[in-house]
Length: 108
Image (cartoon, rainbow, N blue to C red; front, side):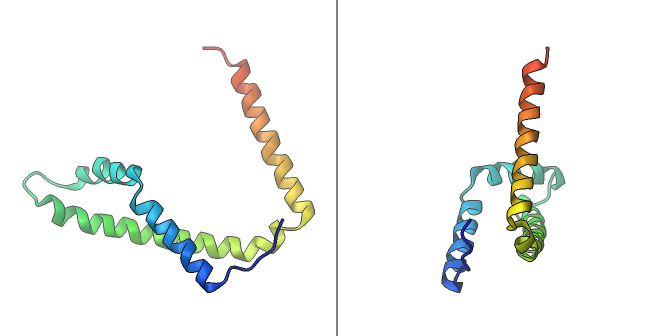
């Protein structure tokens, strides 16, 4: 596992890439079309009602992603230790294999 520290220029590129992926993702548009219409009363202006709701959702998403990024950055040295890394790999591998076995043995 490489241990490189991203430069500020590289970090901005990662941020821009993430923003573009979310803005151009058609699933996000479908999410807003399916979810936000429930909160617009008949006769209300759709755009004026939907934009604040989308803004609140965006703020919550940015806050959550920031907290998760900081938390994982903080525990990264622990997760990068070889013993912890191998243990996590074994646990997740075992979990996936057990799901596969359960699916293979399932009857309809």
